[in-house]
Image (cartoon, rainbow, N blue to C red; front, side, top):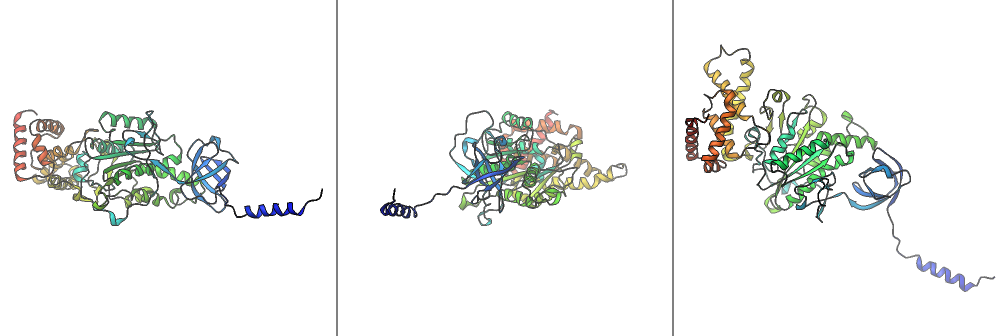
Length: 501
């Protein structure tokens, strides 16, 4: 049958008309290699760094390596359903996590999903896990104390709201205990707490949550747990998830305390991911950007000026050292980023000094700007006594018979200062009680008390002054006037004469 010219013309005409229609593109790729929680994908030419991608089978991942001919993706779900040839689609969205008030009191995983077996988190708000830290121009200098309730910290190494204070020490020296005590001490206050557990055993995290619930610290706390059994990607994301939740509250003008326990395991997880992504290893096999890993995290802790709400995020990063080696790669990096460090020593811990804080090596770069006037008034003398004691104690170990009376008095005062700074776990002290006992120490009221009886004396003194002079404790929490000093002297003498100890 002959083809008519008008039919050919009509087909050509319709094709010409359709030529200019819009073409929709979908950013898709194909898995060419998968293993160890990492997928290498061909295609996805328009994917961006940290973008969420979806694999066939509703498994999500995050793009981290953007190479010329492939994309390296870390798998955030179950990798067992992903194999060579699986399709991948870009979502056009960066990694986001849920934020908001409903998360308080909950335990969530590394991407903010609840894992405590309670009801789903009812929040519609979310924030990107990676944002640029607040500009220096909108920051304010640290001037408000964040009370931890720990005498050795609040008196000698004060922490201010908006500060980044590193907690560093060997394994099992009480680093987590300081974080938990600081969180418990915010009970009934105006500080929201976030505890990020990275690479810990499930049992240890459960114990921590139970402790917070027992002492009333869980109601104002969000626990972000990327456990040791979770993949490296979850452990890598967990601290960024925590700081994103903290930034939500800071934007509302609130004060937040966030503890990262610990960033050593965070660096290990990042190293594992980087090596699997075939990034070149550097010092100690860490990738070259491990400094940037922690700096972009910790720089997001800040105190904003009044024009931007006046909120703050106080960060307590934890670093675990090996045999006291603070000159290793990750410890030196984090020391240089933070505003001071609380150094815990195994020798002090084993000798029974708990918390095992080495007051001489620890430092707060904010200093007394983050202390109440009353604590500032009493802490200086105690720090001086401790410093002189540390110098003398080395010589005193060879015998004290030949020492002069002034040196013996200094040694005795130093021994009592060390005893006063000892404190039980999960029993943070209000500022007023801390000031009262340090004042009693400085004024010599403890000089005639045997060293082994100091703790009993202190406990009974706290009970007495709380029961009989609660108004005085409120007064000396802020300032120590001549009148309050006189009242405090009278209260201490009354207690001493009461025969309670």
